[in-house]
Image (cartoon, helix red, strand yellow):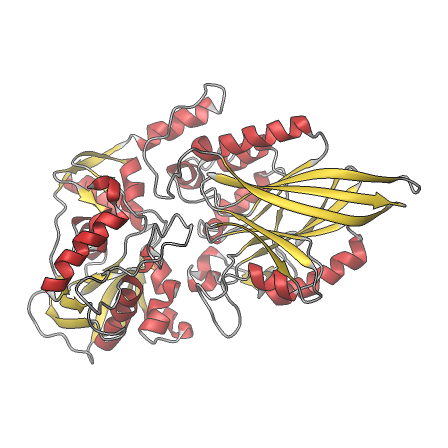
Length: 563
């Protein structure tokens, strides 16, 4: 408690990470070292927070999610070791399924908060809605929330018994409650939801990225710490009462953290002035992309050596041999060995499918030639998606592809224009100069088609026939292999693009795999032993005289180090 007659300042620090995606030895280890240095300088003055998405993205998590399920989950163990004080849950944490994230939450020695993650049975928050953390007598309320777009991405069996409420409405409910019942000195949002509400999923009921909306529309927050969009940001906004709210996002994989400095003036036992500033601290000299899934870098012998050895052994397991290289960068510029290998394997996993849809999930992964290991499988297929077989009409397939290529390609007005749809101002490691997310750049196999980059949006794709030369009909119904992210509405290619109501998507699913798609791809490669990735050449950009030189120019822009 404060002395009632004193007037003094209190300096505090909040260190915020998000979207670490299980990068422990090349991410969390540096976060812990930085936090420990600050704690040594400022005892009883530091809070370490995380914004979610820690249980997916690297073989480290996969091993402890699904292989070693009896040990203490290493992600929980490492975060406990770093002395996190509070965390949020992310959509990719939910993606691992109840068994995994329930175990992780139990084993974390700090609270995981989420006010809008609601138990459908009771109507009450399934997680702690908020937590009070005290430093030097200052009471800080951390209110957690998760993007409500989960049903657009993940099958319900992964989040059975839960619902995800709209964030602005939830914040309006909880901020007055916290004020009345806790009387905190600071209210801080800890959100797994991006900044730009115009980007991502938008429905009449909610938006995917709502952190800015909450900051602007819900009075009471002093600070909002967020993640999900993998962008670096420190920005102030004015809320509905004209008060300033500082908002911070730290990108991904532990490459950067938000270091928030609070100077509080206390008079007569009350905080009478708050000075809140933040900076982004780079923890690596060079950016490490979220697709960096190769062998773990060397680390000190004292930092979890047993777990490090187990993960390295898992990643080094042989799967098979590639007789030729598969380079993900080729997928942006036409039919490619990398994506067409995924198409080919999807057809084998779902043999009844007539058409396959797939997109590059990273950016510049390379596999082979030579031995293929478990680590390579995480470069080939980044996420733990299931594989669905769905019923789509030819017209819906066309609409799906039209939206994909509209996100992917510029409409060229002259031969000197870009063929890729580029945006250089976004500091986002999943875009790398592309305007939109590459994991929504679906191409198709099983049909032959062209993409005319001189045509306006919605008119670029011309489907000529099925791959075997038989007719393709807009009015026929086809069985289509898609991953579960797409099949549940992810990227909105099936909803906005194909025009299928979101509520109708489950009824279109004919079958689903029980294991994640990477598991099935791994089994098929093991069965074959030797794989020769090759482009199927079932689609191409036209007109050739414009497309060919434009593709060469844009490849140099996007992948200058490879040239």
